[in-house]
Amino acid sequence: MHRLAVAGQQQAIARGVGARVSAVWLRNSRFADVVALSWQTLTLGPDATSLNYLGQALSEIGQPQQALACFEQALPIRREAGDRAGEATTLNNIGSVYDRMGDRRQALAYYHQALPIRREARDRAGEATTLNNIGHVYDGLGDRKRALAYYHQALPIRREARDRVGEASTLNNIGSVYNGLGDRKRALAYYQQALPIMREVGDRVGEAATLNNIGHVNNELGDRKQALAYYQQALPITREVGSRAGEATTLNNIGLVYDGLGDQKLALAYYQQALIMLREVGNRAAEAVTRFNVAMIHRAYGNLDEAIRELELVVELDRQVEHPDLASDTAVLEHVRQERAEGPESQ
Image (cartoon, rainbow, N blue to C red; front, side, top):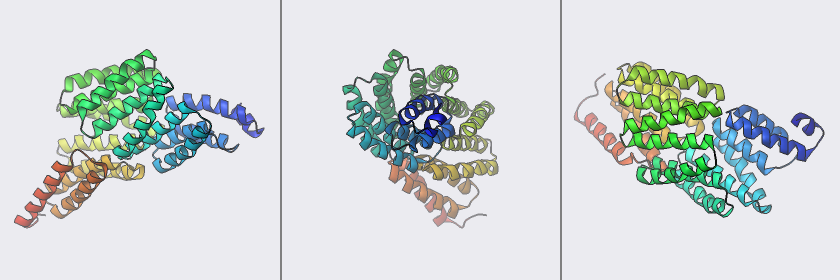
């Protein structure tokens, strides 16, 4: 029907059908299909809804600048039409792209513009999404107490709205906070609530993220075999749906397991695959973490010049994104510089 509408220049039908199909495909992680469908709709002229769906799909497949361009085209269309709910959705989506890129302050600025509009419009599902997203930013900034407060505001609203996808996302995020606090048992409990919901609703990206999180907890608990099993479930899913950011996360995590097993050559190979994708998707916060891992391998091999070069990049990335590890990473850099100054580099 959509193809016929586009061919027949039936703008209203193409937009209506395209929006309904895109919403379903996004939930099922069919991002490449959403991109193709949205571009077809947009051949009939600018449309905020199509631009928003296109931007979301582009963000998921690792094209953040292109996604921002779509959202920035959609925003004035929403405002001109007086579409407050749509304006809030677009502001929230812009915030999400900045968050993925590691620019958390910019992300917060957009989320805090979206939240009062969503409340004004009584968009409860949208309000919960933005609360969840604000929580995610605070978690990334290391303010876990504030992150939990936002997640615990979002969760009952998502349940009230019967938003199963959103509920699973928030459960997963709460698990991540508890993992960061060192409460592995509680983290696993939340992840294990989230995973079957994500499978039930067909959220493949969320499923991969949760598998990654469960693997991470197992790795922290020292069960590396179990951690690898979860990561190896996650990796083909990220590739299947074209989630470059998710694939990079999984590759980094597999590298961590091999690093812990003492196979640093294999670990380095996984880290270097991850770095290519992280630079591609513009995730500077995650790039800093992976570069730190690479630096520690160079240090273990006695390649102190290489370790210092990586750590200098880590510290610069930390500064750019206000990473909570800035102080500790700077201290490590200074320590490695001191190691180099005290003796010849061992080969």
